Each structure stands twice: as structure tokens, then as C-alpha cells.
Image (cartoon, rainbow, N blue to C red; front, side, top):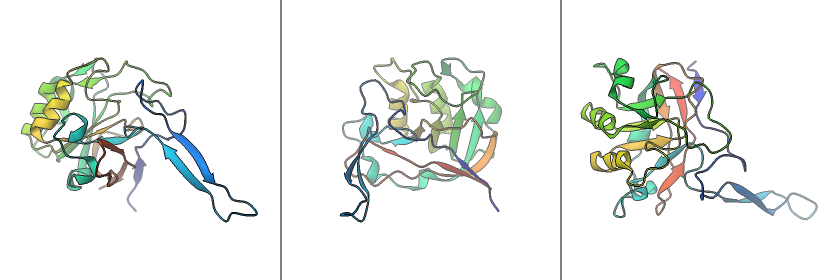
Length: 209
């Protein structure tokens, strides 16, 4: 039987969000009881909560919404690459050890030794634009990271997001990769069909090949 790795962080009211974003709030519009047969909940949350897929609309005013993206980049063979010794900005030298001729079209980068903190922190490893360019040159369609963003938290011009836009790359952020060995897997991380949204939470899973 294939083994599954759940690479989605748990979502609750304490799940960290970027400062100013909306944390998860669950309100019960109906509750199970003598006069009601079901629980019904109403969710309020940022589209970037937990493991999520950014759409071009997030960083391009003319970009596609997440519900209009093709699903193929979010499903298929991927490689988990450990880049645990990298600094604040991962470059090509931090990931080149895993870039061989068999590289699949999806790459997930593990930068953390342990699970992500349960509070917002701006201290994380972002990805250098030049490294994204070289991944695109090698046919990569999707890049995933175990951090809140491919750009530093204090970036205002988002150069790595602009590489995503220009090269047509898809991105997953806030993955939980701390228990995943380096190697090749099948990725399943489909965004919701939110046809006007800039991003969507995903339930990201790896399956052994």
C-alpha cells in the first residue's frame, strides 16, 4: 500500500497568519439539539491560511483567480528537497544537490528543522529570484515552500512572486515538511474552485511512488 504524508498544518483559531490577515473564525449558524438536526458552521479566514496555493491574481492585477487555474501543476510527481542549511534567502547552491536530469516538474523545499512555530514569525527562509528562474529553466511548473512566502516578510516589491508571474509558475506556501524525507513522491494539493479569489487553502498530501 502506498504511504501518505499529510503536509498540511492544522487549522484553528490559533493558526498563524500574516499580520493584518484574517485568522480562522468558526461560528455556528445552527447547532445540534432538540429543535435542530445538524451542526452548520460559517467560516471566516484569509485565503492564505495554512497550506495554500497563490494565484496570479495575488500579485498581478490582471492575473487569473485561483479557481480558474489548471489543476495539472498541483497533482503529480514531485521532489522534496532538503535545504536545511540555507540562510534568509535560499539560492541555487542550496538546492543544486537535488537538481539532476530526473527532476520532476514539481519541487517542494524543506527549510525548517522542525515544524513551523505556532505564532507568526518573520524569520524564515525565502527563495532567491534567480533560483526560481533556474527551476523554471529546468521545466519545473510548481514550487512549494514550508514558509509563509517565497519572498522575505518585509519585501515590498516581491521579486520572487514576480518571477512566478513572468514564468507561469504555480506556488504552494506554508507546507509542513518537517517529517518528510528527501526524495520523490506524488503530490496532491488541489485548490478550491474559488473563481474570484487570489488564493485558496489546500489539503496537501504526498503519496509514495
